[in-house]
Length: 309
Image (cartoon, rainbow, N blue to C red; front, side):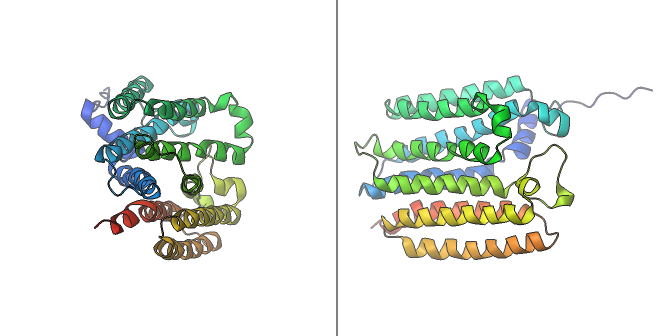
């Protein structure tokens, strides 16, 4: 007796499964709301603008959300060989979603980004192009895949530069249409965004030896548990330093320092427990998410709301 092949899920069902496994919309959406709205609000506070246009928040959020989705899709394309060999359980290798379908989704997202920029403020397209060009270079590993793979630190910082680039676009949704020019404070804000990207990237790739998978590169495997967790702590510290410099320009140092300082202490305890025992590395991903939320709330929405009459 032959067994009938499993029935393929419907169109909406398979996309629902894909987002759940590879790009949880709710989880990512909340962080991207904080990320994008913080950028608009911070720019507005630097420019002494108490009432930025609501369209700036909408365009920034939608475009940033699509950028991060495009990053996930780009990963699916460039990692297909490794995923097929080592991670056949993922949606693309197991046949749930095809690369062709993801390519169409990528193009649809780019069309939405372009349309929003043209409708809101056409010159924003120039800033959008910066993000598109860098994302395209990342998608082909800057035409130096093997060279970068052999240099994980260079690989890390070159790929994390996309974070301040996307954040720069979000800030431009405010300062560009309003006729203002970027201030020094934006440099501190974008530097904090860069190091926070490293926090997130390392935080999701710290595992105990028993949890490591063959063919899956992690920083705990590359540097060892202790060194990798120390690098993660160093990234948190760098983020905090630049965040303090940025917060100083909007008179919000104390709330930011208290909230991130508490999280830094929690991170220190978690790191010690991680490399001294067999506690799961999942805690780093959780703390990285909380850190990101606290960072952007304290550099954007919270001080912005405090200034409202």
